[in-house]
Amino acid sequence: MAHKCFTCVAHIFEKGKALIARVLFIIHGIITVWRVTDVYDDPLLYLLCIPMGLLIAEFFVTTCCTSDGEWKWFCPSVFLYIVSVVPGIWLLQYDVYHARQTYKEVHGLEECGYDTVNETGLRAIQGVSIPIELSSDEWALALEQVLLILLIIGRWLLPKGALTRDQLSQLLLVYIGIAADSLEFSLETLKEPDVLCNLLLIVIILAIWSWSLLQFCLVMTAVAAPKPRMATGKHERTFCGGCCENEIWALMMSVVLQDAPFLTMRLYLMVKYKVVNQMMLFFTCKNTMVVLLQFYRMAILCMNEDDDYDDAESGPVKNGKTNTLEFVEMINDDVKCVVMPEKENNKEK
View: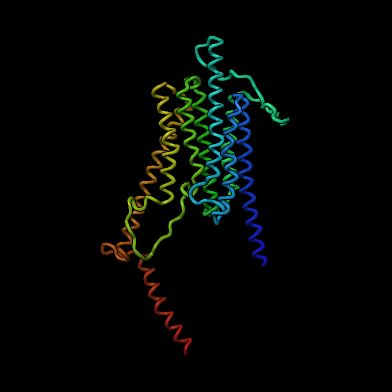
């Protein structure tokens, strides 16, 4: 009885944390849409709140349709949160670009400046206001930073689903690294003088940044589950020894969604626009090393998988040499088969 009560309380606690995570997502989404509508003075922009309404429906669907309270491979609540906030950040960045262009034309400047916008706050709605005054670019940066922080906190509050506690802690550490890299990429590249008033580069950078956020929607592919060693049984050779393993998928997703696009964009800025400084050189070298190490890691995993397959196929004897581990396991199994019947016979006597 006590065990059932404890299980029920734990279940309610998990559902409460999941609801709190979605409430935090909705609050930040509302503030983002509030700021966008305040800047553009267009009520139609309140349509950006639609994904936030879907978050409530998603909560009940996920709760009713999943046994662990979360989907195994994909997190729809995080996806809806990103869809509700990212378009607003795009619009705020475009407003910053337009303000810089206007300031440049009014003052007859040859190049855009970074600090050219006065501080503003949020317009009160139905008597509700937030006493915060920031410049346009600071508003965009602050909302972006809160987005990345809430993605980590939200994943912590959401149910583990099929993840173990060890995998969840590993996933959170991975998310912190992803968030730091994403924030650094958008912050440093958008501050470059050649990017400040180049709308095409701003759109490309924001697109790459938005693309990298999809990593937060993936769950099992972001962590590597330990693979049990099979002492007996048939082993089937697969491409690269098992290309569908979680760790290889995690490495591939990291390269495709983040490291390769970041590296490509930085190299493009360095070659095309001659953007060469200490920070650009450092992070370009860092992305290059990360990509190379990830491909090296995938190659090592593939070779290890092939070695395991060869060991399994050869059995306890390989090329005239004894595989000690397999041989010992086989002997132990034979001993058990002999000893167990003797014990049973003794009991009968």
